Length: 139
Image (cartoon, rainbow, N blue to C red; front, top):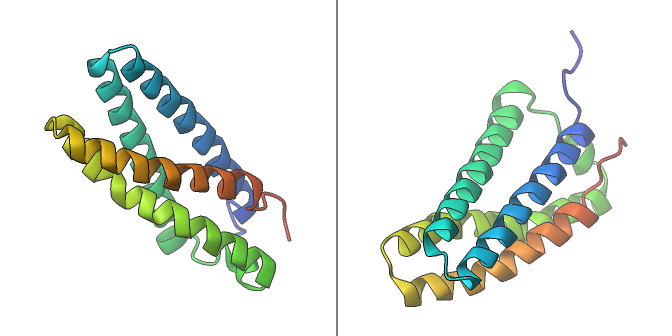
């Protein structure tokens, strides 16, 4: 039985997910700019759940279902570097997300805004490296 999914297809799906959640993030920022804090919180919660779902789904896929899915990236130094560069942004961004949800939900404004600044930089790096540097075509 052959591979059900390929690395490039998974990367393409993750690129689509990055676009979708980034649109949600922009909508969330627009809501807070209009003073709609409740909507901001709800949109951020959806952003968090979708992002967490994508991360956990990817982990299950590459650890349990198809461990060699991204082996082709490891054989190419340029592609490996692109993946590592992306992970330097995306992993810390994922780590900051639960703290953002907590500080926002508990109305710790100063901490939330400080984390938001850090997250913003990390998310921009995630988007740029994920959309423009990770290859979604086969080896």
